[in-house]
Image 1 (cartoon, rainbow, N blue to C red):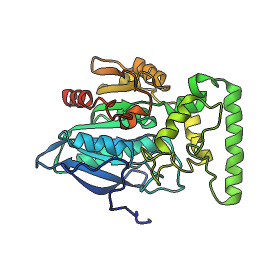
Image 2 (tube, rainbow, N blue to C red):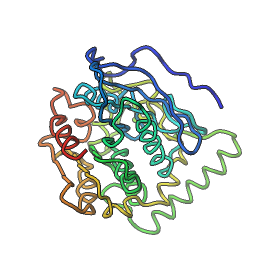
Image 3 (spheres, rainbow, N blue to C red):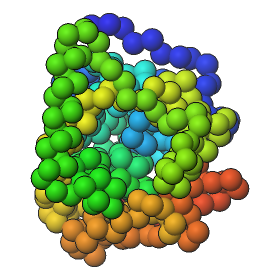
Length: 324
């Protein structure tokens, strides 16, 4: 297995908090893929509650997930922000692929890792998933009973948007059939060429006529606020065929059976709000919460927005502590 090449210098898009400890760690999932993570923990010694963080979909741990992990460490948690399989500094071939079962396994492997640290209280483990990884976090909560609280931030249901299009505008058999035809043509071509064609990330210049949220993504991923050289969204994107599994899978089948606590956190002005609202309708029990942030759009919850004041970290902390 190829040894991971881990960057040791601070290369995050957010400033380092000198009041918490930080180091790189690695661990393997059940598919044998080695995952890379940044671990953050308080300066004070103790046995900490822990949180695993990942997302957004197509981002890296040096972006939003690392910001969340570092902030929660400053509040007394041991945290890891990890790169999913096939992306960032984590292993896995072919690069820039995804699959919901492997994505869930990545989260479970992170819980495996945290559960075996001597300084972690393994009865107090939570997860945070951002954007498409918010959906993966809920899917993980369906299977992993070790997780006491799940926070899904500015959530996408990646299976729904892949199979139905935005706002379910392509929710019909013919549209899905044509998508399958194009994906399978690409598979034939990729095999012939011996390479996997990339779909491209967020464009450098957003074409006219695109929905407003493309500009919002541009203003995070393509500018110093959020650009990172290892981020798929900042650069050349996923493989064209990476959506195959999502087109053939639906998340949240057993969401109504999640007994642990779940908070779905979304922006009032986010184009993706309907994903969070509809997912929340599936959840049962009095330990579930839908929190809508006033005047926040989708990417405001990546880093707090222009004034860095849109992420309700106090409420996230309170919800986790109440339920662990």
